[in-house]
Length: 285
Image (spheres, helix red, strand yellow):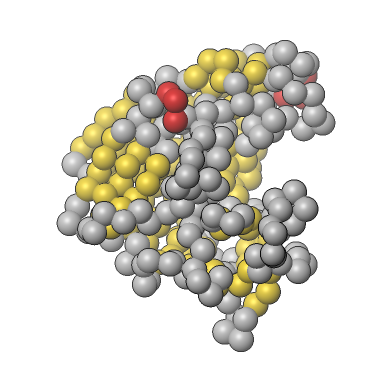
């Protein structure tokens, strides 16, 4: 585990060279934020199985993922799927669209170079497979009251590189089940509603069942500027928000009994030699 700390917060980041049992096939293995603690030592973020259990697929904290699979269209069962930020994942389960939910075995993990300068960590990796290739740089910095993540992705391969990236922060449920006045237009779902202050609020059904009760809801960001500001009603922090420094292509939400998570997506195809830069900030106060 790698730790960044100041007088207000401590950030625990998984080390891609040593925390193998905590890393999996789903989330970007470099710079995965496992937990953030306040000055009292309280965990500020949850997870789908937190705190009773942990698994690399569900994770916890503030992970992010690339869920575009460049070589899948020509793949057969038993092949390896190229996943940005992860490496190659074994295609073990035959489904129409490859997804890490159903294929969790990492055949070959990408190697990361990690450097630290003060409260800033830089994670770099290069990977290639079947003519697809990229260079990824992820910079994570702890400021006085925020966590900033910057991404630089370069297509170094022979083919166009499809990119679908999303953040997956896991929040605790508040007692009132209010999540905030997010700038999102949601598809209809009876488990979500806007309260009198126009804040997204959820319902947790009695005898909650994750399969029966469809808590995933697609949404579209209401974004008129390059950056999207997302205020969130955090259970433990009074003035929390997320700043997405990219064009948000879609903005679903999901929850279970342990956590609720917004998922802002960046979706773009990179031409050969094209570079893509974006950032996301978690404002803790």
